[in-house]
Image (cartoon, rainbow, N blue to C red; front, top):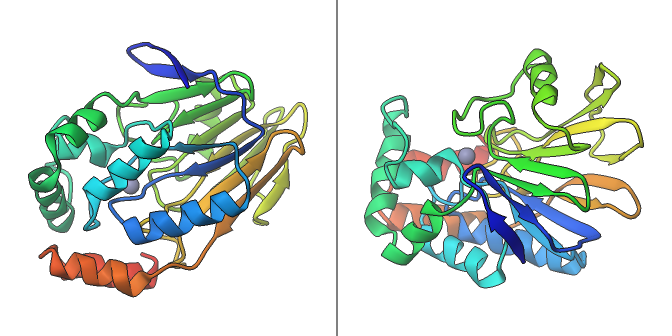
Length: 259
Ligand code: ZN
């Protein structure tokens, strides 16, 4: 399904018309299963994951197993690297740090190896799309894109028409019409010729936009339509799993607030 590896990223060679883009699952298997069910109903040809498969939630191995089993092209997120101690966690808050260390302890060798070999970026040349977890400018630095200024800078660091990111757990669409940036608030847009797009696909497993429902994107490259979607899931089940695992209670509580 994927082409040859390079140190920075890999290239997708699969031709896909309808693509589901997911990110920031964070070990929340209950949310992942609900999103995958929706994507199946929507008849997507391919699913791509923008990273942070683990960290915070109680089912990191099951989430990695699911992506592996389905052959979902996945890039690395900072929490995936943190669980392997490949990135500095001294700037993580105490709760995030506790989750990283718990995740590191429970991950199987096989799943650690899977996370270790994840590329930092993906290119889908057929659809003219770039995927990165945090920012196209510095994929391995895990900087957030939170302002229009940061978005403007980052448009210079990919050449494709569309770039999908995750990381902030807050979905957004930024449309670049020859240097004029707009931020449409409607969840569905048309991909227009001559315009470029930076899309944050939100978070499957720990949304932080005050909406607890898992977030993801469906894009149809033939119809040129892109939509930010939400779905219901067994939130109480995910919370109970966190508490039963002995992870910090706050990680269960925040899921209900979408924060
Ligand atoms: Zn994340």
